[in-house]
Length: 603
Image 1 (cartoon, rainbow, N blue to C red):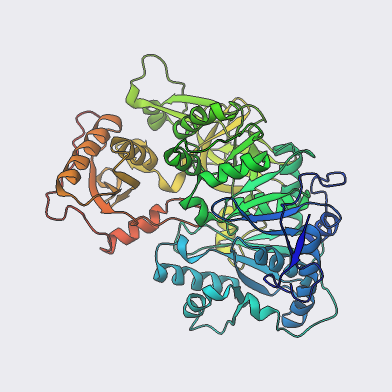
Image 2 (spheres, helix red, strand yellow):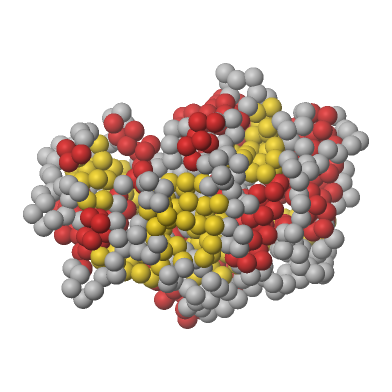
């Protein structure tokens, strides 16, 4: 393996470990795997540094850009940590722009050795416009009480603009090399904090979820040893953003704590060229990789049959981060099966940042365990009764089982009186175990609302049991109650998108005005055209689909692409889209056309 010096990484010009390799790190560790059985992140990196593995960063065409071995990461992080010890008091919060580069990993781990709490921050492209991003950043800085914010030089103007009214210094990654040198470390102990993970922003006030050394170690151990059944032959591939728990925990901290090599591409590169993700898995024999459902759907849409792929090594294709939708996953499976994608490779899971990352995993090799239920019965009785031949097609809905609770963790389905439910009864999903966060940083009200005194977390999600596996049906706060029915906005949105798949993008449905049955159901759907004739065709097709499949009166508005507000994890923020609509900030592409309301004759 040939190497050449570089000063592109923090401390690279002064650090003997500062070089770029022309080959990615190997899959083999060179010594025995340890399944994250460490008390702190610093302990885990000290062990990983004795292995041959590390992080590999690729461009949008699957060409290697930079390699950061765990040995290099340790040297660079400790060197920077000595500077940070003099820069800030122990437990000070550091806002850190979560770019998918070696700099992020180095600074994050430097904070661990310096006893500082990093708070990974989303990037401007994720939150729907500069002004929206700046408002979110201001709220995060307020709740986190940042000592400083670190970012690339290219992001400094927008960061400084956002924090213009706050006495928080914004420093570029290059500025950190000019901090006064120190001579001692101040590593976190097992009873200390680890990071602050901001909620994905589905509400106007993002909450800082506390990650501790204990909760991170417990979750990473459970994930690597039991959830993913990790072995010496495994290798990870990821495009996931590092400001979201699935990217940060699942594909940076868990691999580091288990000495796993990871191949990265930037999330923006994935959006532009999603097949590069599959190319990396094929080229480097990746075995573990995750994505929300939309990532697999994007690969299916963009596939042009213009290259050869071998996906036979991919044994665990994880699904998480949003609702598991079986239809696009089945399409992906069928399309890429001739290229070696195994039928049982899909691995649905369930979790949230409040449980560090994961709470349940489907058994390895199970694939998609589907359960089709009668939605009319479900909406009226809150029971997930399996559909029969007599169930009308429009009343069928297929869910996917998200697996078993991780060892050492408990999952309960409860009603709204806190009674524990069994079988097909739908209720609130509650979780208890060592991976559960102690709460939200300096937000006692939100903490008391979600975390009980005896250690249970009310996730805000609804679900039921399919034998011993949990099935997630949606967020309670998104439910639309109409004439005694529990209407899921996803059902309305998916029906709308299916009606005109090549001309429409994201859809958003929500209730507004009135109380009880007086509420009005709104549906917005993005269109890829502004041609009046085509818009009229889309309008009629969508309205007909809603009438047939949902049977609820809906007020439809066709809107331009880019209208929807997406959280940092790629989820639709219905609350913020609704707020945007009520403020009159959404363009109606058919402003000169009469608005039609679907009748409920078919409902």
